Length: 55
Image 1: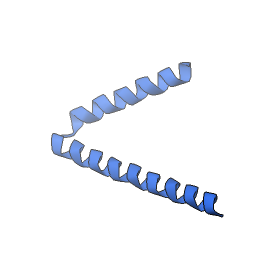
Image 2: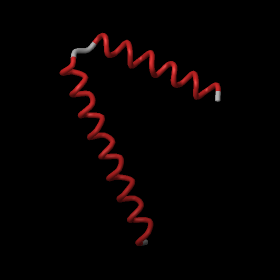
Image 3: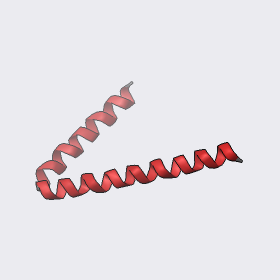
Image 4: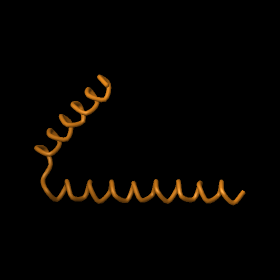
C-alpha cells in the first residue's frame, strides 16, 4: 500500500510540474501520442492473444 501511495504522489507531482511547463498545444500532442501508443499496445497484445489461441 505504501508503494502505491508513493507512486501516486510522485506521478501527481510530475504531472503538475509538466502541466505548468507546457502549453495546451503541447499537452494535446502528448495526449494524442500516448493514445496512439496505447492503441499500438492493444493491437500487439490482441495479435499475440489471437496467435496463442489459434496455434
